[in-house]
Length: 134
Ligand SMILES: [Zn+2]
Image 1 (cartoon, rainbow, N blue to C red):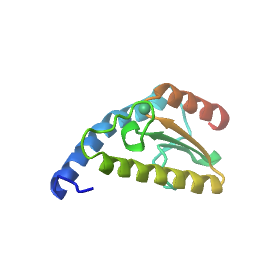
Image 2: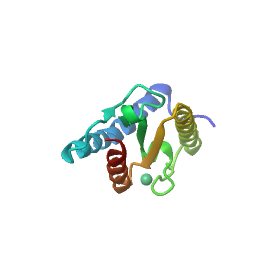
Image 3: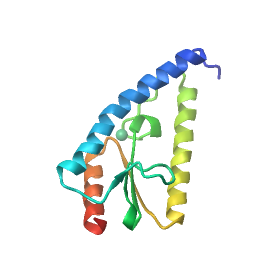
Image 4: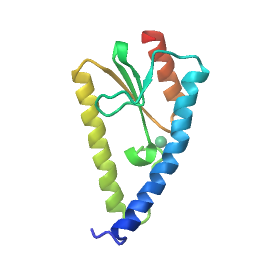
């Protein structure tokens, strides 16, 4: 399938989607554990996949997957144009996710993955990790 946008336009579009998605997610991610006094976690710890949160001492990694980029079955709407292009992107992201999870588990990490839209699940996982390992 031929991309109807040129390279520069395409990368501008992708950058716009990416930064919009990240700003709100990053805010919520950083805000929640602090507000609830959780401790022992690190952001963007340099291991496979760069988890959103890590408890390095006990090897727990928590990923929050963006619904759009990782293909959440509940809320990802397929874009109207260039569907093949976006599908390939999401497929690639998911492949990378699985690879990172596998690599971490092999090294004895507990890996938790939640969807961005499930902020409740995310919060539940944080609490659980804190209770177990904090
Ligand atoms: Zn979702």
